[in-house]
Image 1 (cartoon, rainbow, N blue to C red):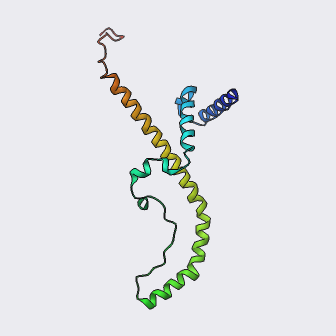
Image 2: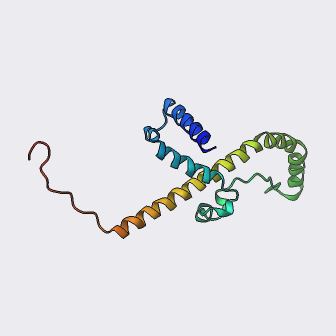
Image 3: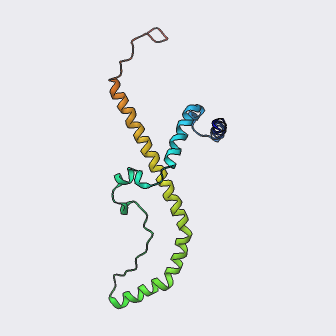
Length: 151
């Protein structure tokens, strides 16, 4: 079974390289790591497992609002007439447009969730790499060996 997965991964990698994907994908091990990261990110089932929505703050500032509220700033008599017009005439048109767009909104929400998970995975990996660098100590200065021109 792992042989089959490897062949599928190699074929996918080859197709992506032919279509102009990053030349870094020429390395099969790097490609496998990138694919694993993206698969983990796509497998995140709930937005509750993500840190980025918490960092973004109040969901009202960044999440789409699809519910409509009927209100008017006009006087009571005029307001009731305008709200009636909105509910009985405009709302059926808006409802059709909303139903038409809702699938796209849902797809975009899912893509955003996967991208949030990818950013979270990359941030965690960056933090791990920084910890490893700090544990190793400061980098050693480059050697003063002569270059190829003898200088």
